[in-house]
Length: 173
Image 1 (cartoon, helix red, strand yellow):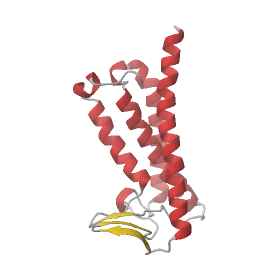
Image 2: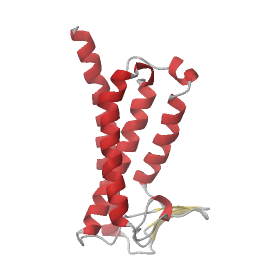
Image 3: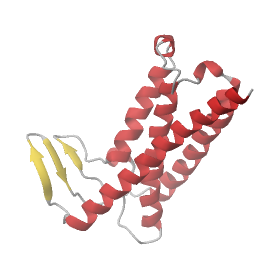
């Protein structure tokens, strides 16, 4: 019995550690970009890939839904609550959905959502002009580390639901 609770605690450690590390990295990078680059200034450019500070994003990832910060903040809060509920409740009811890849994926989604939520809240309280985006690839709208983590997390989570991914699961996570 102690092994089961230890194993369950390990699941949560991986999930929350990934989310925490992502939030910290995201906020530190965004802070550095805001403090060291003027809007429009580029830090690094190579071909179609550029690290540059762009005007603050008042919408969702990739510039979707501009000027809907309050609604996006509420969606983020609900999303965070759902992810945490999923991690603590749904995994128990559906053990086939509990694998290391899904825990990593949900950690990425949670961390990315919290990272952008922090800036949305600061925007609502007048502390920032919006979410800081700084990665620009060709014609694609600018984005940030949190946006990337959410997208990669969703892709990994969907993949983790397929039986081949579940068979390759590393149980040591």
